[in-house]
Length: 80
Figure 1 (spheres, rainbow, N blue to C red):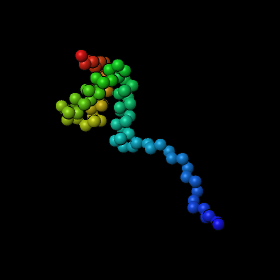
Figure 2: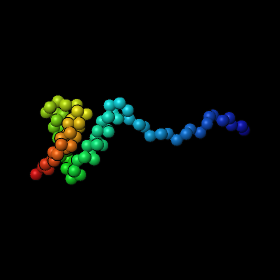
Figure 3: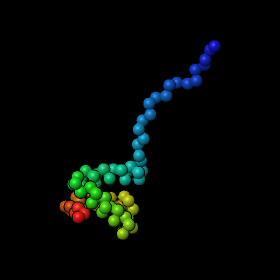
Figure 4: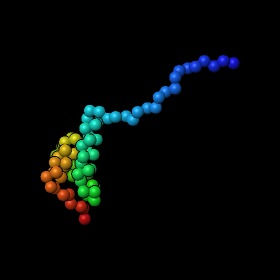
């Protein structure tokens, strides 16, 4: 019994690279995480969420606003 070749062996898949707004969100979140004090990450995320819901900011705009605040010396407070 003969078996015909169906095709070549597929090459390994490359990881999916985000693009557009997704890439910008990921990049900004990474920069924010690197700039934020490690023990205050929860407070940083809370501030991003607060800006989104109370100020009506987009996720990207909120991330950028909090990043700018941290870059200017703001240190988020930890909840008690």
